[in-house]
Length: 274
Image (cartoon, rainbow, N blue to C red; front, side, top):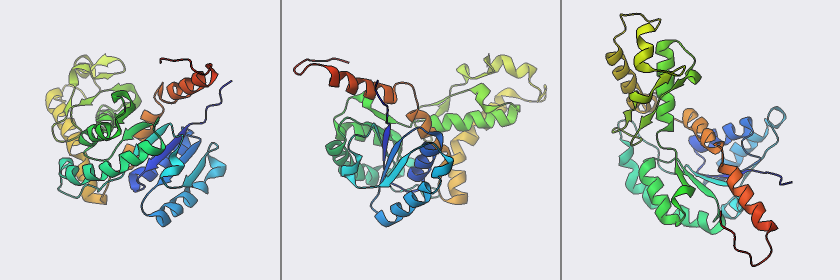
């Protein structure tokens, strides 16, 4: 029997990286978490704080480390980078953060060459491509968080407007994680019913103008990051939970663990193809 021990490394322990680690711990999505950051003293403090919740969460080992400690990681999350300032677009971050990734990604590949890379730093689409190029990994092994958070924001705003549970809404924001993204209304559903069919019988009544309301909801999604940053300086809770959703997606840990176990059972010299 193969014992699964999911290991996740987080490169960059600002608010997003720490929120991700916290969400991993309380959901039991990882059994080993390594936090890596240039500010090692602050990261040690974050680890101490996280570990003091041990009696209330599933068993997990959380520690601060450097790149050698990420060896054997199933996932390496890249959250390092300069944060977005009020009034700044995500694309404004590209030049500096691509340069940062050019140094980080080769170090990750040196110590955890088989890990799946989960890219979250902004601009996430540009940096996902950069991580793929710098790493030399197959495209399926470099995952960007993309518009998952935007889709979650849309589901929340729809749920609040329609007064239903957000988990009963399936709606997607596609395209760039940025100003050019768009809502795919044609496949949005509430309780399995397409939005165009649901709206006429909605409890909000005939006074609800569907087109205008949907446009307003999407505008709220598109502008939400800027609104949050203007108020508290950063966004981190939502993306931290979104990262855990990606981490727990079927096949992420299973694929690596199964492939490793199968290779271990094969006679030496046998070629295996997954």
